Image 1 (cartoon, rainbow, N blue to C red):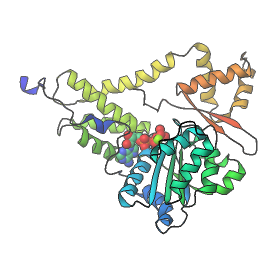
Image 2 (tube, rainbow, N blue to C red):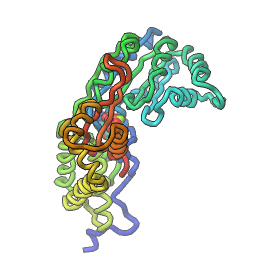
Image 3 (cartoon, rainbow, N blue to C red):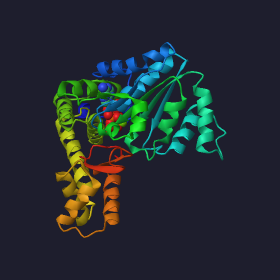
Image 4 (cartoon, rainbow, N blue to C red):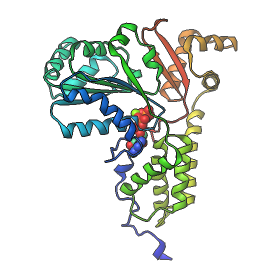
Length: 354
Ligand SMILES: Nc1ncnc2c1ncn2[C@@H]1O[C@H](COP(=O)(O)OP(=O)(O)OP(=O)(O)O)[C@@H](O)[C@H]1O
Ligand SMILES: [Mg+2]
């Protein structure tokens, strides 16, 4: 009986870091083709010519960020003549914040009391001595695009990679910006079940003591993850199932632990939408059945269905739903119709808050 029990100083986990969403594994299986494509865009930089720009798009949790970070790491190991820059535009969402971040990454510290243009001059002086690869992740979350103009105009040898969930972001750009940017597009498609299994298995080997996973239990995680088309949910389920097994001092992670972990994942989505008041719920339903419309069009439907709120209040409600990640909102600057906001229903796929 006690042979089957985990003693208090034993753990099923080897290294939980490998289950973190921002962990970068040594290999990125099933993205070889995409990585090659990205590398090709940078190739001209090695012979001191200007590189190509690229918009990478695809659903959440399909490896866009990790594939790019991995390439930047390799680049850094290979050469000193190309500076790798990675910016998350959700966190750094204005030109000023982005320039500050560039200074920080280039180890320039005297940024206090400096205006955007002064910061950029410093960045420019440093970067124009080399070539640069910029990755702007979550690019659709930026509030202004002045930084892109500056970079396009004044940094000479560069590849700009932009990552977004939406391909349309590029089409809706201001035509002046678009004609300078001339970006190719690359889609990351969701993994199939076999690929998902491979990827999760790799993480399992890093994260768990060998042999603790019951085969059936692991397979059911791979299946559920492939269904959700988001590797993050698989990482979450592995960690949670491992914890549940440990709580029971079980030496094996079994199907029942996985089933309970899946229940927790579902509960999380339901609980989250339970937090909304009935008004917000109604609005969420409206967005669900009209996903992808402009905010103005959505407001028309809302009013036709008897919605009472003013446009301002309506906008505020939308912003609140976005904060809770129930929906995603894409702001498009410029374009033929001026600034617009496109609202999309999103399944609870961003699992960062667990
Ligand atoms: N091919 C892969 N090999 C190893 N790990 C992967 C692979 N694809 C995705 N992952 C892992 O899945 C998780 C989600 O991937 P990533 O953060 O790159 O998604 P994303 O496409 O950028 O999603 P989002 O649009 O939500 O930002 C990360 O922990 C990442 O390490
Ligand atoms: Mg990402």
